[in-house]
Amino acid sequence: MEFFLDTANIEEIKRINRLGLVDGVTTNPTIIAKENRDFEETIKEICNLVEGPVSAEVIGLTVDEMVTEARVIAEWAPNVVVKIPMTEAGLEAVNILSKEGIKTNVTLIFSVSQGLMAAKAGATYVSPFVGRVDDIGVDGLELIQNLKTVLVNYQLDAKIITASVRNIGHLEKAAIAGADIATIPGNLFPKLWSHPLTDNGIKQFLADWEKVPKKQEVR
Ligand code: E4P
Image (cartoon, rainbow, N blue to C red; front, side, top):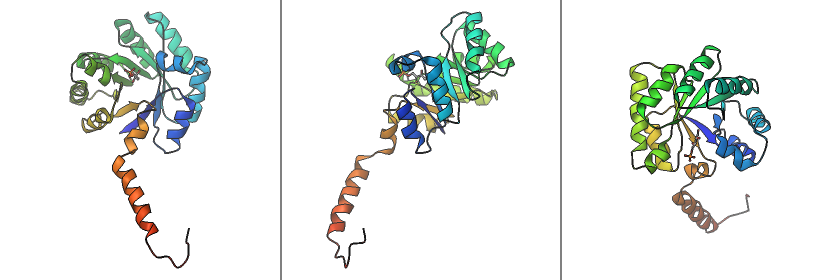
C-alpha cells in the first residue's frame, strides 16, 4: 500500500518523508488555506520535496475553467496531479485531460458508481471519502471494498486513494480491502507507528537494564 500525506504543511511532510513513508501528497482548498501561503508556491515546494504524485485541486466548476486551470497546474512540476471534483463537467474535463497525458485525481467520491464513472472517464486516481461517508451513517469502508472489486472486475487502471481517513481503523481496513493508496493527515501518521505497549515495554527494559551489574559503562 502506498501512503500519501494529506497536508500542505512543509514541516509535516519533511518529518514523515525522513522515515521513507511518503509516496505522495494530496491537498485540497481547505488544506491549502490552513497554511496561509500562495497556492502555486506551496505546490511547487511540495513537488520538490517528494518524488511521488502531488495533488493540487482546481477551483473552476465549468469544463473550460477546469481544463484551463489544469493545464496551468500541470506545468508547475512533473509530479503534479490535478484534482478534479466529481461532477458531470469534472468527468468531461478528466476525459479531455487524460487524452493530453495530464494526470487527474477525481475527488469527492461517495458511491461506487461515481468511482466507476471517474475511472471510465480516464482518471488516474479516484478518491472515495471514507470518513465523510461514515459521518452520514453509511459504511465508508464498504465503499472502498466494493469500488476495488468493480475496478478489478473491469480491469480499469484508476488507482483508489482512500481519502478522508480519520483513524487507524480506517487505514487498516482500507489496506485489507486492497485500496492502492491511503492519504493520511499529518496528525494521524504518528498514531500509526505508536503503541502504548511499545512505550511501556521500552520503559520496563530500561528500568531492568539499570539492575544489570556492569563492569564498565558501555554507553
Ligand atoms: C483528500 O484528497 C481529501 O481532500 C481529504 O482526505 C478530505 O479529508 P476530510 O474529509 O477529513 O476533510
